[in-house]
Length: 313
Length: 250
Image 1 (cartoon, one colour):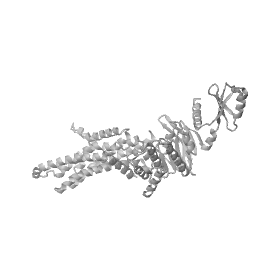
Image 2 (image 1 turned 180 degrees about the horizontal axis):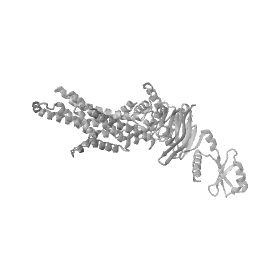
Image 3 (image 1 turned 180 degrees about the vertical axis):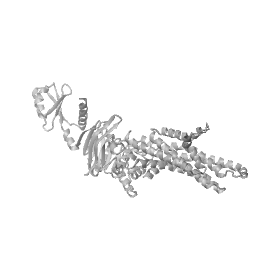
Image 4 (image 1 turned 135 degrees about the horizontal axis):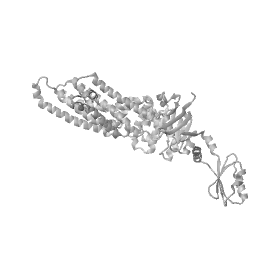
């Protein structure tokens, strides 16, 4: 076993006839922050529940730190910290009581409990509310208690299901910083459907749609990949699109309205100059020519819809 | 680990008014019943003294008190057990226990012992009342101990069944109704047996009341004790199986 923290092989999960996760395989190494992306119902939460032993996979196997999750569940779960989509909080306890209880559940020794709880509280900014009832805390603070609970026993793997839901922008920033910091020593999986979050805090990204893996890349490669550019062009009168067929770097021309066009192109050779030249020479009147920065959203929609198209065929 | 879960369950009960109000109401009712029994005994005391082999203080006071307590606890236990697993599932806090390094056995046993803790408090408060009679009289301590033991076995059985119902029901109220219904059925099962004069052996064995009364009378019988132990372990194992099943199906 090298430094692979999670090794999931051919995971599948069926709810009756409905297939939520289909033959998903991936790994997580130490120091990686893996972002799980997918539209609603893609199977993100199901996958996470399977990783944490809350749900048994219909097929496939999961190794956590080298322990098989089915054969040695206790050792495997010892290395896991999990925050489900709804934070599992006993609302009638205070933050201190709750965290102490969680520490005991994770078999921390009596001596370890106090420093661990203090550490988790200061990391999640809970010191001010430590003696308040969880029920009386705002949703953002409750979410933080949930995160504190997941990192409390200093697990090798931290699995966070939509950790920034319900937080205000400052808290989101703090949590992202925390995730980055934790990412140095731990392996982290976080699921989200907010793409900028992945760009900011993850080192790897994994996109799933309808239970299948669509893409697994490092963030830098993904950013490169996204740089297939788009140029927005507006002209006074309609242009003859055939004029551009000579430019090899243009992959596709989309006409949105009569005089509005989107030129999709490869990033290695930017055809923006050539396009300007052709339009000006044709006498159609160039009104606007601007590059459009493609966001991760576009890329995401692109990737997920491609699969749907394939299925339609 | 089991004790961690058990102590949290018990603590949570005392954080809400539930445990306090149950303790208060039970104590009030039982104290009233106890006093009536004492009153009855003191009015018949003179007559009883003339009869050979007459029932003593233990028979007249302790036995009815514990019988009444058993029936009241039959009503109360489902209310205590209904939330155990059901509520955790509804509030999604079950994920905390399932993703912690715990086996289902530890979770179920912990919850069982937590509720049993409160019931032990109730039973001991009930036993304090007859103990106060020692100031001015004498008790058959052996029989008294048997009564306490019988009541403890009985409430453990109630709890295990209630826990199982809480595992399978989707709503706490449903869990309470189902466990109350089943317990009551097991309680009265023996009544029908006597109707036609030919009681069914099976019903006779299944009836909780029979076994309870048998131990209560001071007769420690392996059949009765094993009935309760079997009952408790059956429902605990069923609960564990049910919790495991949560991971597989859903």
